[in-house]
Amino acid sequence: MGKNRRLSSQTPKRQKHPHTSGRGARPTGVSKSKAIARKPHSQPSQSKPAIPFLPSDRILLVGEGDLSYAHSLINRHRCKNVTATVLESSEDELISKYPSTPERRGVDENIKALKADGGALKSGVDVSRKNYMGKSRDRWERVVFNFPHVGGKSTDINRQVRSNQQLLVSFFTNTVPLLSPDPGSSILITLFEGEPYTLWNIRDLARHSGLEVKRSFRFQADAYPGYKHARTLGVVKRKDGSVGNGWKGEHRAARTYEFVRKGEGERVGSGKQGDESSDDEDVERLVIGDYHADEHDEDTYDDEEYEPHLLS
View 1 (cartoon, helix red, strand yellow):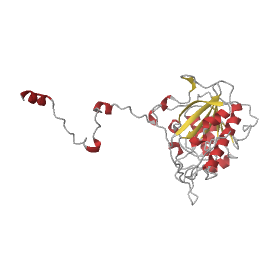
View 2 (cartoon, helix red, strand yellow):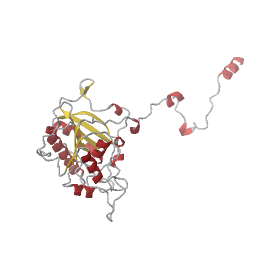
View 3 (cartoon, one colour):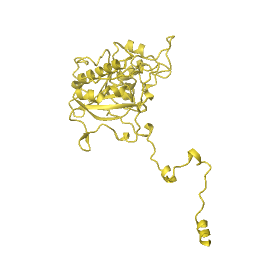
């Protein structure tokens, strides 16, 4: 009995912590040290943004919207060889479509900044048309199409997917001849994460046009001070015609895909084409089950069953 008494005195009773009882208790077999030592989740704001430009690069921006991206490339990243194009037929139409607001710099200011630093602006450029840069003999190291979209022309998901696929296939086909012959010259396209954009199968569309993915990386709008996402349809307007609070597309998760001519992509591991940047290992991908459009979105789809088809 004395032996048992000594053993009980050496083995302290397990104390019940007032905050670990019930649902909040730590599972059996999991030590406190292990629970604390979990790898912290990588936040987009904590990783260094990928900037795919050099100040000396010849850069062609298509579908530039309000030109705030071009303005940031020139003023923040010191890119001097920038040519920006817009679908609108004139500068007046562009200014009317994207008027200045308390949150958004006016297009006229962006145009002045572009031209003051030796950049060029070309209106009425439809990238779905062959030879969309006309008789220009210029060739570019980087051709950029941020957030391509045909606009909310239909509420049918299949039509929207096919229309945007057609736009991208035409763009790829018509842009390859505009790339500089220098190895590594590339086409960059940025899309929002999740559906419906994943349904476009952008990698496959590029392969059909003789391109391959060199890499993809998170698009961080904060890396381009002054940049505001511009909707294809223009600024958001209220029923009385006044300008709303603005479209906050730059705050949505987005990804940039960099395409090069076949054979020029970087190879990693066992010969697999490398299409992810180093910041992806800890990033939780955004997955959306059902797509719901809101009143400010360009994509007005019905929540019905759909079977998108890849264009051949």
